[in-house]
Length: 295
Image 1: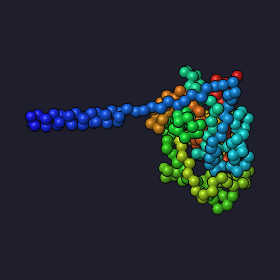
Image 2 (image 1 turned 120 degrees about the horizontal axis):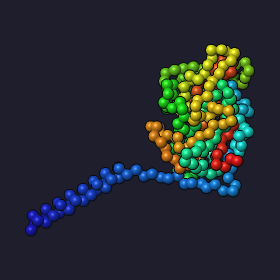
Image 3 (image 1 turned 60 degrees about the horizontal axis):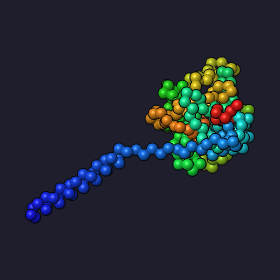
């Protein structure tokens, strides 16, 4: 009787152990996917971005002027009539809508405005975010819009550049990247203010993002420098604005994000290049809008 009781007890313990192990394994396999809440369009919804969350410029010829400070960044809200320069590579702006911009199947959903024109684009990488935690802040996960340069020679994901404050306002700004390369944001005679952002209180700072190829820039004729547009997927790329499909957003591994909609966008200067007397390649941002609300 004692032997039978002991055997039964061991079987019970073994069963409980197996149950705990199964639950543990099951938990490891289950991925909880939290869907972002949809903020509906109302009669008062604005087609254009309405909120500025961050302005993080890189050094540049328009930085520390009305075209390259927070005042200029705020001027891009509510319309596409403002203009702000993001500076050299990595400079970025983060803005948000007053509603969720939904992904319309088979259609473009957003238009991002810049001041690109024929033969002169200054392409910016576009990132989108859904307000997954519903707190109204851009503190969830960014997804990159997969443009035509994605994965091409010269395209680098997880790129970083550290800028160093120069000794004088008219001195060029030194940079070093995480690929072992160095260079300068070259100053010129047309813009004599400090190129290093006055909002940065440290002697160095680092910007992160995606580097786009500079192969579209033609400097063979120094008096007529051109920068051809990419086929699609970038801001400040084509005249009249660049239409973007939310369904092209991808994660850090290149997998489709499958977002139902987005609440925030980030635009980041994509190319690191000095263009002679024209100064650094710097993405300009003039606004963004929900295409479904534009007449």
